[in-house]
Length: 469
Ligand SMILES: *[C@@H]1O[C@H](CO)[C@@H](O)[C@H](O)[C@H]1NC(C)=O
Ligand SMILES: *[C@@H]1O[C@H](CO)[C@@H](O)[C@H](O)[C@H]1NC(C)=O
Ligand SMILES: *[C@@H]1O[C@H](CO)[C@@H](O)[C@H](O)[C@H]1NC(C)=O
Ligand SMILES: *[C@@H]1O[C@H](CO)[C@@H](O)[C@H](O)[C@H]1NC(C)=O
Image (cartoon, rainbow, N blue to C red; front, side):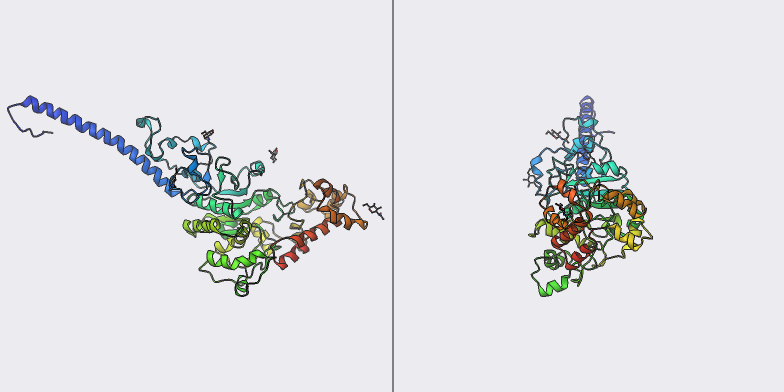
């Protein structure tokens, strides 16, 4: 490399000095540029991954420099990026994601680490999506240890709807719309890293609407057929028709006639909500699906809609002036429509149990015993109570044996005051109530609770009465 020098033979020494100076300057510039570029690249990578996983649910396991920017109500602007969404989707398996070194170069601002030793590799760690995950809508008070104790092979996402980001690993922008807010938040946060199959559940292990004799979510999850979920796309976890099927809502008629049906508020608000949520679908005459908002989805089914749809729908939930429990119920009768099923989606129960759980060849009697109505609150201490189904029930042994066993403890009330005692049950403390739960009074109690159930159709109320035990 020969640099042109202004004077040739006169001063060869001076031009050589200039040459050295020039080379040094170029070298310094180049190395400075290299360092700069590295940091620029680093920050670009962060931003890219940040926007690839829009986080609107908050993962508090990552400390942020400005916690005040994470107002739980400000779900919609994640531009500040204080909530490293990148870890939400990918690196939950290792128990301490907050210790990943890449955190220290967030936004290209090196924090006390000499930049020359920080690896400049972009932080996106390609992880294979999981086969299956559980999504729980829980509250802080819920003891969720039953999940890991009984379903250790499932990865679980436990959202605490009433928690601040500091209080729980996963929470939601605002506690509105019951479980719907959780399910949508999970779908939004994990849209790009969804498992093959995700199951959406409430927090409690024993819930009155789980349709196995123990009302046990562990049984539902354990027996669910993932291959069927992959085929069907959307699978309701409930096969029993009681509440929801064959037709719970009549949107078109309510839209035309606008009845003031205070006993069934969801039916009243549903037509307008439906028109907003599904502008492209004609107002249906009937909407029917087994109740209670627990279902499973395949990744492909979720991906049939763009991420923006779910963001929009969740915003609807956040903005709705309706009471949170009502919007939750609107969604209860919307999920199957959102995921492409007919508005009336009531499968033959026997076929449904066979496909969904592998319980095939059920007799009519099996079907009747598979789910029974005991009210929305199961007896205290369930399933360790005298009138809970015993193991014999569950394994299909003759019923008589089980009955005599379970009746051994409480004395059946056969006298006329049984009805009297039933009237008192609601005011009695649980311990005493348990004692009074003889078979007769228990059935009367169930019937009474069917009549008290709020916001259901007359047909569903009758179905509960028919299933009272
Ligand atoms: C976050 O920082 C606070 C102190 O500011 C600390 O007490 C807490 O343990 C940190 N949490 C995590 C998950 O690092
Ligand atoms: C970023 O955070 C500041 C508070 O630190 C807040 O005032 C501002 O609105 C936020 N911007 C966005 C886009 O979230
Ligand atoms: C939570 O439930 C488990 C049983 O699943 C029990 O062992 C544990 O003591 C409970 N924890 C609390 C705090 O109640
Ligand atoms: C009916 O039961 C009540 C207590 O539950 C008792 O006081 C009463 O004597 C009983 N009557 C008959 C006829 O057994």
